[in-house]
Length: 29
Image (tube, rainbow, N blue to C red; front, side, top):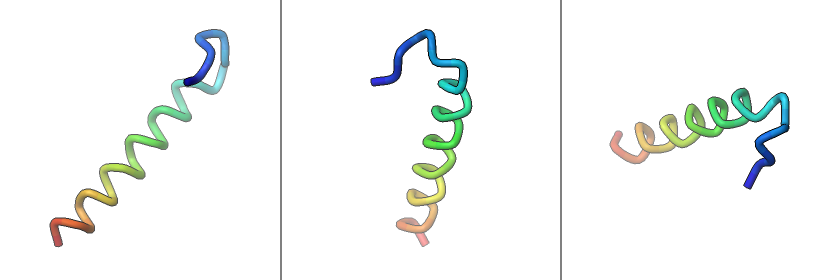
């Protein structure tokens, strides 16, 4: 999805993972 040359790619991935993790926790609760 993201180009390997994008400097902010790691930050985007981490933020997306955090958002997904939060949604999973919300669904569990």
